[in-house]
Length: 291
Image (cartoon, rainbow, N blue to C red; front, side, top):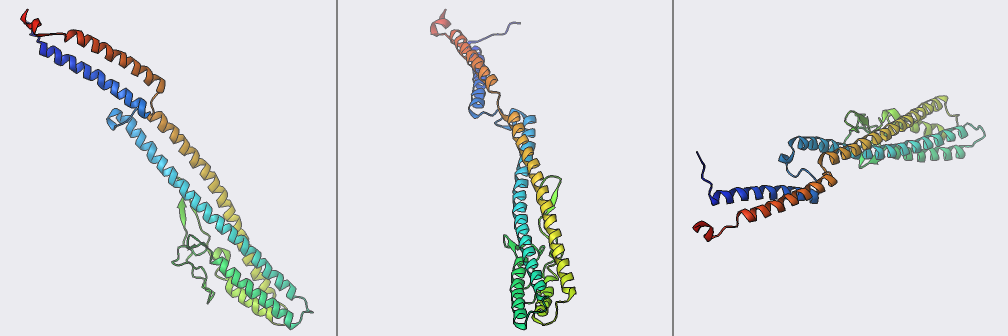
């Protein structure tokens, strides 16, 4: 049985072939102009799935780096505040040592008490230090105070403020007020001011309690320093992972430029050849049908 081949079927088949070649040429030109070999998921479903995973992980790393910057800034404020607290408490102790001089008169002791009272106001202000309008020594308490300036009462709740700094790690961004004597310091300073204003020697209990508070502040400073070192290490790891993902995304999505250029040139030659062949095949006229 012989199939009848008409001029129309030849033309249709030739046009389909030309359209196919032109489509391939268009795809290669699009890849070359965009630099990406995937423009729609159907181009490479497997690579598309990988790209979605890589980009999701990269977005998470970017957020972790933002979190790390926030924690670093907050701990920096806390570190500076604890250093200032330590200096002020040390100044109070120096006043207490001066008061041990038995030759000091009532006026001199009153002056020492006045200085201690001024230092107390500064210390309470430092305990109420905030970062982004949140107290750094009051946990998650509402408001902006860790210590009530009027009553001297500690109003923090010591609830941890935890921030995620990597896929597997979190870190506490605050310091408990009770860990730096915020709950006992106001009353202790009131007692010291009163004892400094009297003519009697400062009781040894004042020195003992103030030294204990100072020790807490120093321990908190060491803990904050250790957390800052841990955050620096975490930032380096997360940033390295983000850069690695950038490289993987490029390998997964970007075109191989030399290979794409060669393929484009080959496809252009193939398309021009197809056009030439089609021109010869489709050179028909009315006279061809009348022969």
